[in-house]
Length: 79
Image 1 (tube, rainbow, N blue to C red):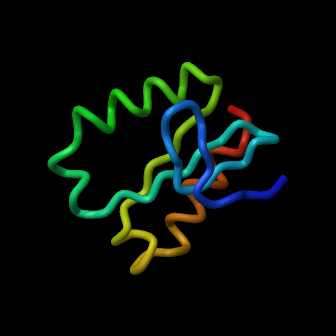
Image 2 (cartoon, rainbow, N blue to C red; image 1 turned 120 degrees about the vertical axis):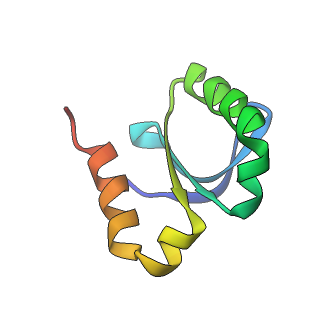
């Protein structure tokens, strides 16, 4: 399993994608606060394509990298 950056899924370009496990990781910057409705619609469409979506904030990636990685690992762990 490996992640690729800037992957096209349908009409969207996602930040990171691991096709083999159908997982998308989206890193959200500050501008996503004003785009909540659009982001929710985008996420639903990506999920309809069979992918799970994990969203992490840019701030978490920069200042809490281990927590951001833990969230991705948790999404990879079967429940």
